[in-house]
Image 1 (tube, rainbow, N blue to C red):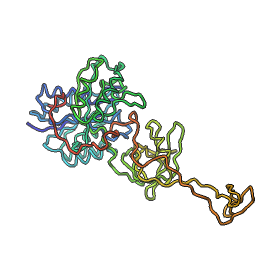
Image 2: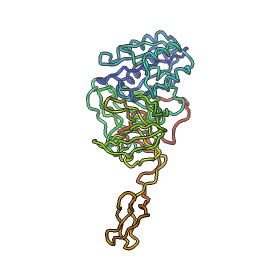
Image 3: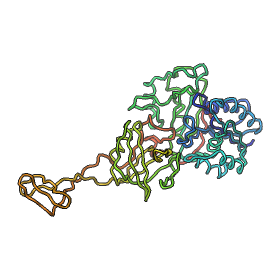
Image 4: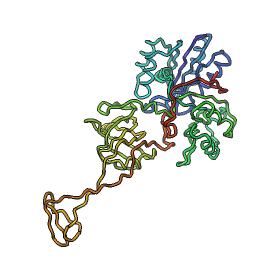
Length: 440
Protein backbone atom coordinates (compact mmCIF):
# COMPACT_ATOMS: atom_id res chain seq x y z
CA UNK A 1 0.00 0.00 0.00
CA UNK A 2 1.05 3.62 -0.58
CA UNK A 3 1.01 6.55 1.83
CA UNK A 4 -1.06 9.40 0.43
CA UNK A 5 -1.59 12.78 2.04
CA UNK A 6 -4.81 14.49 0.90
CA UNK A 7 -5.61 18.08 1.86
CA UNK A 8 -8.22 20.62 0.81
CA UNK A 9 -9.49 24.04 1.84
CA UNK A 10 -11.94 26.84 1.02
CA UNK A 11 -14.89 24.68 0.04
CA UNK A 12 -17.40 26.70 2.06
CA UNK A 13 -18.79 30.21 1.85
CA UNK A 14 -20.65 32.54 4.18
CA UNK A 15 -23.90 31.23 2.66
CA UNK A 16 -23.23 27.62 3.63
CA UNK A 17 -21.34 24.36 3.08
CA UNK A 18 -18.58 23.14 5.40
CA UNK A 19 -15.07 21.83 4.77
CA UNK A 20 -15.20 19.41 7.71
CA UNK A 21 -18.54 18.00 6.51
CA UNK A 22 -17.03 17.38 3.10
CA UNK A 23 -14.12 15.63 4.83
CA UNK A 24 -16.62 13.50 6.80
CA UNK A 25 -18.28 12.32 3.59
CA UNK A 26 -14.95 11.75 1.82
CA UNK A 27 -13.54 9.68 4.69
CA UNK A 28 -16.69 7.56 4.87
CA UNK A 29 -16.49 6.73 1.15
CA UNK A 30 -12.73 6.17 1.13
CA UNK A 31 -12.92 3.65 3.95
CA UNK A 32 -16.00 1.76 2.83
CA UNK A 33 -15.74 1.86 -0.96
CA UNK A 34 -12.06 2.38 -1.79
CA UNK A 35 -10.53 0.43 1.10
CA UNK A 36 -8.33 3.28 2.26
CA UNK A 37 -7.01 3.31 5.82
CA UNK A 38 -6.46 6.41 7.90
CA UNK A 39 -3.09 6.44 9.65
CA UNK A 40 -4.05 9.46 11.77
CA UNK A 41 -7.26 11.15 12.73
CA UNK A 42 -8.50 13.56 10.08
CA UNK A 43 -6.67 16.81 10.76
CA UNK A 44 -8.60 20.07 11.18
CA UNK A 45 -5.99 22.80 10.94
CA UNK A 46 -6.87 26.42 11.68
CA UNK A 47 -4.65 28.90 9.87
CA UNK A 48 -3.96 32.61 10.43
CA UNK A 49 -7.31 34.00 11.67
CA UNK A 50 -6.47 37.53 10.53
CA UNK A 51 -6.72 36.77 6.81
CA UNK A 52 -9.45 39.17 5.60
CA UNK A 53 -10.79 36.90 2.83
CA UNK A 54 -11.23 33.85 5.04
CA UNK A 55 -14.64 32.27 5.57
CA UNK A 56 -15.53 31.78 9.23
CA UNK A 57 -12.78 29.82 11.03
CA UNK A 58 -10.15 29.59 8.27
CA UNK A 59 -9.92 25.82 8.72
CA UNK A 60 -8.41 23.33 6.28
CA UNK A 61 -8.43 19.53 6.36
CA UNK A 62 -5.75 16.91 5.80
CA UNK A 63 -6.20 13.13 5.55
CA UNK A 64 -3.19 10.82 5.88
CA UNK A 65 -3.98 7.51 4.22
CA UNK A 66 -2.70 4.09 3.27
CA UNK A 67 -4.17 3.34 -0.16
CA UNK A 68 -3.91 0.75 -2.90
CA UNK A 69 -4.78 2.95 -5.88
CA UNK A 70 -3.66 6.57 -5.61
CA UNK A 71 -5.14 7.60 -8.96
CA UNK A 72 -8.61 6.34 -8.06
CA UNK A 73 -8.48 8.14 -4.70
CA UNK A 74 -7.34 11.39 -6.30
CA UNK A 75 -10.02 11.27 -8.99
CA UNK A 76 -12.71 10.70 -6.37
CA UNK A 77 -11.51 13.52 -4.07
CA UNK A 78 -11.26 15.99 -6.97
CA UNK A 79 -14.81 15.22 -8.03
CA UNK A 80 -16.17 15.49 -4.46
CA UNK A 81 -14.44 18.79 -3.78
CA UNK A 82 -15.63 20.30 -7.05
CA UNK A 83 -19.22 19.15 -6.58
CA UNK A 84 -19.34 19.71 -2.80
CA UNK A 85 -17.93 23.23 -2.70
CA UNK A 86 -19.80 26.53 -2.78
CA UNK A 87 -17.82 27.70 -5.80
CA UNK A 88 -20.62 29.85 -7.16
CA UNK A 89 -20.96 31.64 -3.80
CA UNK A 90 -17.38 32.67 -3.31
CA UNK A 91 -15.51 29.48 -2.44
CA UNK A 92 -12.09 29.05 -4.08
CA UNK A 93 -11.10 25.46 -3.32
CA UNK A 94 -7.60 24.07 -3.45
CA UNK A 95 -6.68 20.37 -3.28
CA UNK A 96 -3.22 18.92 -2.68
CA UNK A 97 -1.94 15.32 -2.95
CA UNK A 98 1.43 14.02 -1.81
CA UNK A 99 2.48 10.41 -2.18
CA UNK A 100 5.24 10.03 0.39
CA UNK A 101 6.07 8.29 3.66
CA UNK A 102 7.12 11.61 5.17
CA UNK A 103 6.20 15.27 4.92
CA UNK A 104 9.09 17.38 3.52
CA UNK A 105 10.69 20.06 5.68
CA UNK A 106 9.72 22.78 3.20
CA UNK A 107 6.05 21.90 3.60
CA UNK A 108 6.36 21.98 7.39
CA UNK A 109 7.98 25.41 7.19
CA UNK A 110 5.25 26.57 4.81
CA UNK A 111 2.62 25.45 7.33
CA UNK A 112 4.28 27.32 10.20
CA UNK A 113 4.37 30.42 8.00
CA UNK A 114 0.66 30.04 7.14
CA UNK A 115 -0.26 30.13 10.84
CA UNK A 116 0.85 33.72 11.30
CA UNK A 117 1.39 35.42 7.94
CA UNK A 118 -0.17 36.06 4.55
CA UNK A 119 0.91 33.72 1.76
CA UNK A 120 0.10 34.20 -1.91
CA UNK A 121 -1.22 31.54 -4.21
CA UNK A 122 1.89 32.03 -6.35
CA UNK A 123 4.15 31.16 -3.42
CA UNK A 124 2.08 28.09 -2.59
CA UNK A 125 2.30 26.88 -6.18
CA UNK A 126 6.06 27.33 -6.11
CA UNK A 127 6.38 25.23 -2.94
CA UNK A 128 4.01 22.56 -4.26
CA UNK A 129 6.00 22.14 -7.46
CA UNK A 130 9.32 22.05 -5.63
CA UNK A 131 8.07 19.29 -3.29
CA UNK A 132 6.26 17.29 -6.01
CA UNK A 133 2.82 17.93 -4.58
CA UNK A 134 0.06 17.47 -7.14
CA UNK A 135 -2.55 20.17 -6.80
CA UNK A 136 -5.80 21.34 -8.34
CA UNK A 137 -7.65 24.61 -7.87
CA UNK A 138 -11.02 26.19 -8.62
CA UNK A 139 -12.05 29.83 -8.70
CA UNK A 140 -9.02 31.94 -7.87
CA UNK A 141 -7.42 28.92 -6.20
CA UNK A 142 -6.59 30.64 -2.93
CA UNK A 143 -7.60 27.45 -1.12
CA UNK A 144 -4.29 25.90 -2.15
CA UNK A 145 -2.59 27.94 0.57
CA UNK A 146 -4.76 26.33 3.24
CA UNK A 147 -4.45 22.85 1.72
CA UNK A 148 -0.65 22.99 1.85
CA UNK A 149 -0.78 24.57 5.30
CA UNK A 150 -2.84 21.66 6.60
CA UNK A 151 -0.69 19.07 4.83
CA UNK A 152 2.49 20.45 6.39
CA UNK A 153 1.08 20.65 9.93
CA UNK A 154 2.16 17.49 11.76
CA UNK A 155 0.76 18.37 15.22
CA UNK A 156 3.68 16.50 16.76
CA UNK A 157 3.42 18.48 19.98
CA UNK A 158 0.42 20.28 21.44
CA UNK A 159 -2.96 19.47 19.90
CA UNK A 160 -6.61 18.92 20.79
CA UNK A 161 -9.53 16.92 19.42
CA UNK A 162 -12.99 17.88 18.24
CA UNK A 163 -15.99 15.65 17.77
CA UNK A 164 -18.27 17.22 15.17
CA UNK A 165 -21.81 15.99 14.60
CA UNK A 166 -23.61 16.70 11.33
CA UNK A 167 -27.27 17.43 10.68
CA UNK A 168 -29.45 15.78 8.12
CA UNK A 169 -29.88 18.05 5.11
CA UNK A 170 -33.56 18.71 5.77
CA UNK A 171 -32.55 20.45 9.01
CA UNK A 172 -29.93 22.77 7.53
CA UNK A 173 -30.90 26.36 8.23
CA UNK A 174 -33.36 25.45 10.99
CA UNK A 175 -32.65 26.53 14.58
CA UNK A 176 -30.50 24.04 16.49
CA UNK A 177 -32.19 22.60 19.58
CA UNK A 178 -29.61 22.23 22.34
CA UNK A 179 -30.49 22.36 26.04
CA UNK A 180 -28.08 24.73 27.78
CA UNK A 181 -28.54 22.89 31.11
CA UNK A 182 -27.24 19.68 29.52
CA UNK A 183 -24.25 21.60 28.16
CA UNK A 184 -23.50 23.18 31.54
CA UNK A 185 -23.60 19.80 33.30
CA UNK A 186 -21.44 18.19 30.61
CA UNK A 187 -18.94 21.03 30.87
CA UNK A 188 -18.71 20.70 34.66
CA UNK A 189 -18.46 16.90 34.55
CA UNK A 190 -15.67 16.88 31.94
CA UNK A 191 -13.65 19.89 33.18
CA UNK A 192 -10.76 20.50 32.49
CA UNK A 193 -10.68 17.92 29.70
CA UNK A 194 -13.17 19.71 27.44
CA UNK A 195 -13.29 23.43 26.77
CA UNK A 196 -15.41 26.23 25.33
CA UNK A 197 -18.72 24.42 25.77
CA UNK A 198 -20.57 27.18 27.59
CA UNK A 199 -19.71 30.71 28.69
CA UNK A 200 -21.11 30.99 32.22
CA UNK A 201 -20.54 34.73 32.50
CA UNK A 202 -22.28 35.51 29.21
CA UNK A 203 -24.79 32.63 29.52
CA UNK A 204 -24.07 31.52 26.00
CA UNK A 205 -23.84 28.06 24.37
CA UNK A 206 -20.55 27.79 22.47
CA UNK A 207 -20.67 24.33 20.89
CA UNK A 208 -23.10 25.15 18.06
CA UNK A 209 -22.59 27.55 15.14
CA UNK A 210 -25.23 30.06 14.11
CA UNK A 211 -24.72 29.73 10.34
CA UNK A 212 -26.84 27.51 8.07
CA UNK A 213 -24.07 24.92 7.62
CA UNK A 214 -24.38 21.16 8.28
CA UNK A 215 -22.72 21.19 11.73
CA UNK A 216 -25.04 20.33 14.63
CA UNK A 217 -22.47 20.80 17.39
CA UNK A 218 -18.77 20.35 18.08
CA UNK A 219 -17.11 19.27 21.34
CA UNK A 220 -13.46 20.21 21.83
CA UNK A 221 -11.21 18.45 24.31
CA UNK A 222 -7.98 16.73 25.22
CA UNK A 223 -8.59 13.19 23.97
CA UNK A 224 -10.73 11.25 21.50
CA UNK A 225 -12.50 9.42 24.31
CA UNK A 226 -13.47 12.52 26.23
CA UNK A 227 -15.00 14.29 23.21
CA UNK A 228 -16.73 11.09 22.11
CA UNK A 229 -18.37 10.87 25.54
CA UNK A 230 -20.64 13.72 24.42
CA UNK A 231 -22.58 11.25 22.27
CA UNK A 232 -23.84 9.43 25.37
CA UNK A 233 -23.87 12.32 27.85
CA UNK A 234 -25.66 14.92 25.69
CA UNK A 235 -29.22 14.14 24.61
CA UNK A 236 -29.51 14.69 20.85
CA UNK A 237 -32.59 16.79 20.07
CA UNK A 238 -32.54 15.82 16.39
CA UNK A 239 -31.45 12.83 14.34
CA UNK A 240 -27.94 13.35 12.94
CA UNK A 241 -26.34 12.29 9.67
CA UNK A 242 -23.17 11.17 11.44
CA UNK A 243 -20.07 12.35 13.28
CA UNK A 244 -16.31 12.25 13.20
CA UNK A 245 -13.39 13.16 15.42
CA UNK A 246 -10.69 15.52 14.17
CA UNK A 247 -7.24 16.07 15.60
CA UNK A 248 -6.62 19.78 15.60
CA UNK A 249 -4.52 22.79 16.57
CA UNK A 250 -7.61 24.47 18.05
CA UNK A 251 -7.10 25.84 21.54
CA UNK A 252 -3.29 25.85 21.23
CA UNK A 253 -2.41 29.49 20.41
CA UNK A 254 -0.40 28.13 17.48
CA UNK A 255 -0.90 31.38 15.59
CA UNK A 256 0.72 33.38 18.40
CA UNK A 257 4.10 31.61 18.56
CA UNK A 258 5.84 34.11 16.28
CA UNK A 259 7.57 37.07 17.96
CA UNK A 260 6.73 40.35 16.25
CA UNK A 261 8.97 43.40 15.92
CA UNK A 262 6.65 46.38 15.63
CA UNK A 263 9.16 48.41 13.63
CA UNK A 264 8.72 46.01 10.68
CA UNK A 265 5.33 44.43 11.36
CA UNK A 266 3.07 43.65 8.39
CA UNK A 267 -0.69 43.91 8.18
CA UNK A 268 -2.72 40.75 8.87
CA UNK A 269 0.15 38.97 10.64
CA UNK A 270 -0.23 37.31 14.05
CA UNK A 271 2.15 36.71 16.93
CA UNK A 272 3.24 38.15 20.23
CA UNK A 273 4.90 41.44 21.15
CA UNK A 274 7.07 42.10 24.20
CA UNK A 275 6.88 45.82 24.91
CA UNK A 276 6.25 48.61 27.38
CA UNK A 277 3.13 50.71 27.72
CA UNK A 278 4.05 54.17 26.48
CA UNK A 279 0.76 56.04 26.91
CA UNK A 280 -1.98 55.88 29.50
CA UNK A 281 -4.82 53.63 28.20
CA UNK A 282 -8.11 55.38 27.51
CA UNK A 283 -11.62 54.20 26.74
CA UNK A 284 -13.32 55.09 23.47
CA UNK A 285 -16.91 54.75 22.27
CA UNK A 286 -18.14 51.19 22.59
CA UNK A 287 -16.07 50.44 25.67
CA UNK A 288 -12.91 49.59 23.73
CA UNK A 289 -9.53 50.59 25.19
CA UNK A 290 -6.68 52.14 23.20
CA UNK A 291 -3.08 52.66 24.30
CA UNK A 292 0.38 52.90 22.77
CA UNK A 293 3.20 50.41 23.23
CA UNK A 294 6.91 50.89 22.70
CA UNK A 295 9.53 48.38 21.66
CA UNK A 296 13.06 49.69 21.42
CA UNK A 297 12.65 52.90 19.36
CA UNK A 298 9.35 51.98 17.68
CA UNK A 299 5.83 52.78 18.91
CA UNK A 300 2.45 51.48 17.78
CA UNK A 301 -1.15 51.72 18.98
CA UNK A 302 -2.83 48.69 20.52
CA UNK A 303 -6.54 48.04 20.90
CA UNK A 304 -8.45 45.90 23.37
CA UNK A 305 -12.07 45.35 22.40
CA UNK A 306 -14.94 45.36 24.85
CA UNK A 307 -16.37 41.89 23.96
CA UNK A 308 -13.12 40.22 25.03
CA UNK A 309 -13.61 41.42 28.64
CA UNK A 310 -9.95 42.43 28.60
CA UNK A 311 -10.79 46.14 28.45
CA UNK A 312 -11.17 46.30 32.25
CA UNK A 313 -7.63 44.90 32.49
CA UNK A 314 -6.07 47.16 29.87
CA UNK A 315 -7.49 50.33 31.40
CA UNK A 316 -5.52 49.60 34.60
CA UNK A 317 -2.17 49.59 32.83
CA UNK A 318 0.17 52.50 33.38
CA UNK A 319 2.94 54.05 31.34
CA UNK A 320 6.12 52.02 31.71
CA UNK A 321 4.46 48.68 32.52
CA UNK A 322 6.24 45.76 30.82
CA UNK A 323 3.78 43.49 29.01
CA UNK A 324 3.51 40.77 26.40
CA UNK A 325 0.47 40.85 24.14
CA UNK A 326 -0.78 38.30 21.64
CA UNK A 327 -1.93 40.22 18.60
CA UNK A 328 -3.32 40.30 15.11
CA UNK A 329 -2.24 43.30 13.05
CA UNK A 330 -5.07 45.34 11.56
CA UNK A 331 -4.27 47.03 8.27
CA UNK A 332 -3.79 50.78 8.32
CA UNK A 333 -5.84 53.24 6.28
CA UNK A 334 -5.37 56.81 5.09
CA UNK A 335 -7.01 57.98 8.32
CA UNK A 336 -5.71 55.41 10.80
CA UNK A 337 -2.37 53.62 11.27
CA UNK A 338 -1.87 49.90 11.64
CA UNK A 339 -3.01 48.74 15.06
CA UNK A 340 -2.29 45.74 17.27
CA UNK A 341 -5.59 43.98 17.99
CA UNK A 342 -4.93 42.36 21.35
CA UNK A 343 -5.87 38.72 22.00
CA UNK A 344 -4.28 38.27 25.42
CA UNK A 345 -2.29 40.36 27.90
CA UNK A 346 0.54 39.03 30.00
CA UNK A 347 1.66 41.61 32.58
CA UNK A 348 5.39 41.07 33.15
CA UNK A 349 6.31 43.99 35.42
CA UNK A 350 4.33 46.80 36.99
CA UNK A 351 5.72 50.28 37.41
CA UNK A 352 5.18 51.98 40.79
CA UNK A 353 2.39 54.56 40.79
CA UNK A 354 2.24 57.55 43.07
CA UNK A 355 -0.32 60.13 44.14
CA UNK A 356 1.34 63.56 43.98
CA UNK A 357 0.41 65.86 46.89
CA UNK A 358 1.44 69.34 47.93
CA UNK A 359 3.56 69.50 51.10
CA UNK A 360 2.00 70.18 54.53
CA UNK A 361 2.61 73.51 56.27
CA UNK A 362 4.92 72.90 59.23
CA UNK A 363 3.32 75.78 61.09
CA UNK A 364 -0.39 74.81 60.96
CA UNK A 365 -0.44 71.36 59.27
CA UNK A 366 -2.64 72.56 56.41
CA UNK A 367 -1.91 71.48 52.84
CA UNK A 368 0.01 74.26 51.08
CA UNK A 369 -0.54 75.66 47.59
CA UNK A 370 2.00 76.08 44.83
CA UNK A 371 3.13 79.61 44.06
CA UNK A 372 4.08 78.60 40.52
CA UNK A 373 6.93 76.77 38.86
CA UNK A 374 10.10 76.97 40.97
CA UNK A 375 8.43 79.57 43.27
CA UNK A 376 7.82 77.32 46.24
CA UNK A 377 4.63 76.93 48.31
CA UNK A 378 2.47 79.09 50.60
CA UNK A 379 -0.08 78.20 53.23
CA UNK A 380 -3.47 79.87 52.65
CA UNK A 381 -4.27 79.86 56.38
CA UNK A 382 -1.14 81.21 58.04
CA UNK A 383 0.64 82.57 54.96
CA UNK A 384 3.80 80.68 55.82
CA UNK A 385 6.05 80.25 52.78
CA UNK A 386 8.57 77.56 51.88
CA UNK A 387 10.90 77.93 48.89
CA UNK A 388 12.96 74.72 48.92
CA UNK A 389 10.39 72.01 49.46
CA UNK A 390 8.92 69.62 46.90
CA UNK A 391 5.70 67.83 46.30
CA UNK A 392 5.15 64.55 48.14
CA UNK A 393 4.94 61.23 46.30
CA UNK A 394 2.59 58.76 48.01
CA UNK A 395 2.87 55.15 46.71
CA UNK A 396 -0.42 53.72 45.47
CA UNK A 397 -1.46 50.10 45.40
CA UNK A 398 -1.93 48.84 41.83
CA UNK A 399 -5.34 47.37 41.01
CA UNK A 400 -3.82 44.89 38.58
CA UNK A 401 -1.34 42.05 39.19
CA UNK A 402 1.36 40.46 37.08
CA UNK A 403 0.19 37.38 35.21
CA UNK A 404 -1.81 36.23 32.21
CA UNK A 405 -5.19 37.66 31.18
CA UNK A 406 -7.17 35.97 28.41
CA UNK A 407 -10.54 36.79 26.77
CA UNK A 408 -13.90 35.56 27.97
CA UNK A 409 -14.82 32.27 26.19
CA UNK A 410 -17.44 33.84 23.92
CA UNK A 411 -14.69 36.00 22.38
CA UNK A 412 -12.28 33.11 21.81
CA UNK A 413 -11.09 32.41 18.30
CA UNK A 414 -10.76 28.76 17.32
CA UNK A 415 -7.05 28.90 18.07
CA UNK A 416 -7.30 30.74 21.40
CA UNK A 417 -5.87 28.67 24.25
CA UNK A 418 -8.44 28.53 27.09
CA UNK A 419 -7.33 28.99 30.68
CA UNK A 420 -7.61 25.33 31.69
CA UNK A 421 -5.22 24.23 28.93
CA UNK A 422 -2.29 26.17 30.39
CA UNK A 423 -0.03 23.60 32.03
CA UNK A 424 -1.52 20.52 30.33
CA UNK A 425 -0.19 21.10 26.80
CA UNK A 426 0.85 17.93 25.00
CA UNK A 427 4.47 17.31 24.06
CA UNK A 428 3.92 14.39 21.67
CA UNK A 429 1.26 12.38 19.86
CA UNK A 430 0.69 8.67 20.27
CA UNK A 431 -2.02 7.21 18.04
CA UNK A 432 -4.54 5.19 20.00
CA UNK A 433 -7.20 3.18 18.24
CA UNK A 434 -10.73 4.30 18.99
CA UNK A 435 -14.25 3.54 17.88
CA UNK A 436 -14.25 6.97 16.21
CA UNK A 437 -15.66 7.13 12.71
CA UNK A 438 -12.71 9.41 12.05
CA UNK A 439 -10.17 6.61 12.51
CA UNK A 440 -9.47 3.18 11.12
